[in-house]
Length: 396
Image 1: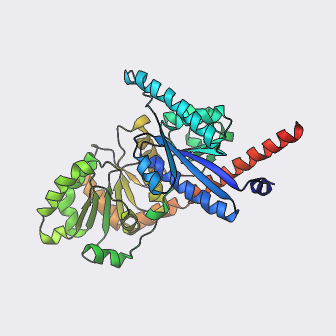
Image 2: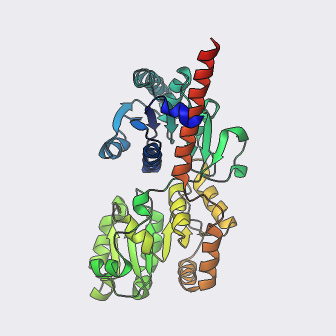
Image 3: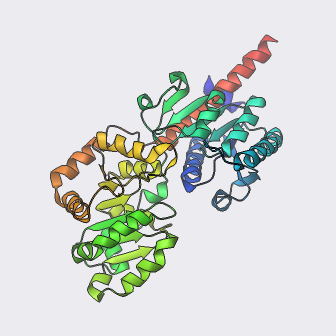
């Protein structure tokens, strides 16, 4: 019945929304790719429109994918007293009317909301126009934007198992895990080709250090303290962020040629990230939901260091779930010594039993096809909406 209803109209319009960080934008685009793949099987045409902020980083990313983009005004809702709450309230109100105009003109079959405050006015506009919404929560604690739109969505896809969330109606949830970009799940180079390309010493284990899109001064400091020891035995690929890049570039120049050959630095790793993720032996990173999803999907051994200032303490809560399940080692920022850090790195690189145990546990907790599950649910909701419309018209 669902297939027949979908076939009645070959063109399906999907409105995507989310912004503020790559952690919202890239998963939304990954879901869009799966929607296209399913639509091709169903011989259904898909049209996308993306609503983001006027000046956000998502605009460039979305346009590079060839998807039409509309920017709206957006503010931030703060959970503390701040005069900007007043001005941002006006921005959100203006954004709502902009979104309402866009949705009226575009008339999407469904809205997929991936997070960020730009989604709030869009979802409210969709509610007014009776357009179904499916949203996605990446973290183990629901963000404020998703809490605000929860009453208005048809489904809330969850990045973590449902039983760790509080006060979410079970009927509204679907456990999908977090979408992971295909381009970082595979390497265009074999491991020996990677060593040759970057002139690494052969047969050394690779430590990949990621501090998030902006870098992490705390992680940079910890790596700085142990760098010489690590380079004696391992290869270190280090994404420093903009603020740390110049310092580590100068530090690398001061190393002996032997150690320099084992140290590769970037301010930000873009298209090459898949190469290093796939072939790394140990990952040191923050505890953002997308990075954790990559760890599980690729079965990577990792030390995660939560960002203490993350909203709602979500990184620490993400990390604690991973630690409880035995999926990663968690080290709280500032709560361990240089020696502790080195000892844990050595253990995780050389304790075969510990490594195998972590990898085995990763097999059974998170779905590996998150984006596809969300895409399938989008088609189910559209089919239900069409069926309800047909039945309503038949009863008139």
